[in-house]
Structure formats: structure tokens, C-alpha cells
Image 1: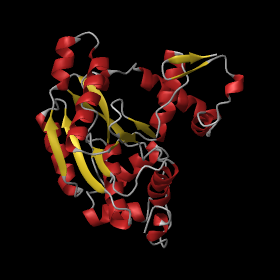
Image 2 (image 1 turned 120 degrees about the horizontal axis):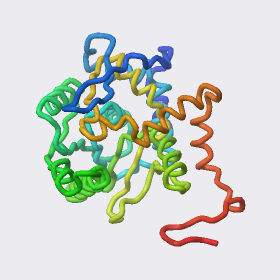
Image 3 (image 1 turned 90 degrees about the horizontal axis):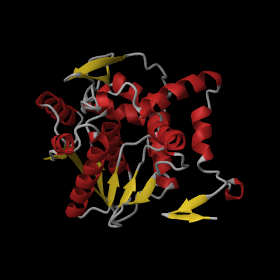
Length: 305
């Protein structure tokens, strides 16, 4: 069975419940910072129930858009060696389970590993992360990289840019050292829309987070199979299965109530009240740019007239 017909591999018997209630979100303290975490509404579900919910209850909300992105952007091919990066948050945990389901259901021959970088999490967060991995049946290699401490020491007033750059560099290098040709990240539909808006509003450029893109070294591809998956559906999946994922962990990002991404999130929430399809329109716009009607554009680092 290949990716062309894999969606039909699961039983269609159960009706899909595309819940949209995301009210059970609360704050949890991380040092002096505050970060959103998901409060599950039921006792932890057995592994079999968690996996079945992907195949049944959340098939249309999670599995179908996941497979759609794989097909549309040709993310998985025979012979691929794919590393799935797990941060411990809701998005990467779901991505890991989707890839496990894909591995079981697909005849496409690819190798799959799960890796996670510890940039400096507190011990309590690491313990919870490891507990989640065990409960969700994910065999993950966890390696240490003291990124946060270095970023704070080198740029104490603005560590975020350096931290993000270092985290990408360390992760990419690790995947390349392991000999894998693709790195799967947990960015979802809402991340792509928000990134588009951030670039337009704060950087004055029209660009977005691509579902598939070569790494800067050219040695592997970065893939984002959740490109069509909505964040609200990920939250509902986590709540339904009582999976309490790690919060963001970073003491800086957690406390950034006025961060650019949060500003955009709030703006989009307001716009959705008047136009419920606003996010889809923004996403579609990045597929329909007419170069005959722009003032200028660039390709790589070169401006075009």
C-alpha cells in the first residue's frame, strides 16, 4: 500500500467528531514565566485508545490532512530515512503518532527515528516528557545541548534569535550525523498562517513557512506534514486522550505576553469573528501570488525587477 490509497486503509465506521472547544487552557508557571498548557478532561487513555482515536474519531481532522500534505508535497518516498523531531509539546507528539501509524499502514519503504534535543529543560519537565513518551509508545533518542545557557550568556538582553539559530543548527547537525535525509517538524496550519502575517507586518516581506524545503547545507529536506492540520484539532486530540504535553519550557518565550506571534494570534482571533475563513484565505493567498501585480520580488538574495 502506497500513499495514494493509504487514507482508505482505516475503517470508516465511526463518525468523526471535529470538536472545536479549546476552553480548557490554563497557565502553568515555569520559573518566573507563564506558559499555556492543555488541561486534559478525562483520565489518561490506554495507548490502544490513543492510536484508535487517530484512525477513527480524529481521522478527518488529523489523519486525512496529514496524508494530504504528504502526497501534495511528496514528503515521503521509498528509501527515505526520516527523523521526527520531538520537542515534547502537543504538535510534535501528535506528529510522532501519525508517523507511527503511517509506518504501520504504508508499503512505502522508509526508515523512521524519533529524536529530541534538551536545550536546558528543568528536571520536572524532562521527567514529564519521558513519561509521555513511554505512555504513548514512542522510542525517542534524547540528547543534551546547553543552548539556553549559552544564549543567555552571549546575548542576555535578546537571547531569542541566537537561541533559535543554535537550536536549528544543533538539530540539523545531529540529523545529518545520523545519516537521515529528512527532518520532520511539528509546525501546523496555524503556524504557517501566523508566520506569513509576522513577515508581512513586522519584516515587510511576503514569505511563509514552507511545507517542504531543503536545509541550508543541502544535505536533507525539512518537512512539515502538519501543514494542513489545525491547532484547535490538535488541542482537542490531546484533551480527549488526556495527554498533558510539555509547555514551551523556555522562560523567555513563555513570558512574552507581547510577543509578535501572540499579537498576531490575537489579531487573527478578532478577524475570525467577522470572517471565519480568514486563516484559510491567508494560506491560499500564499499559493496564488501573481507576480504581474507586485511592486518587486526576490529570488534567493537577489532582487528581481
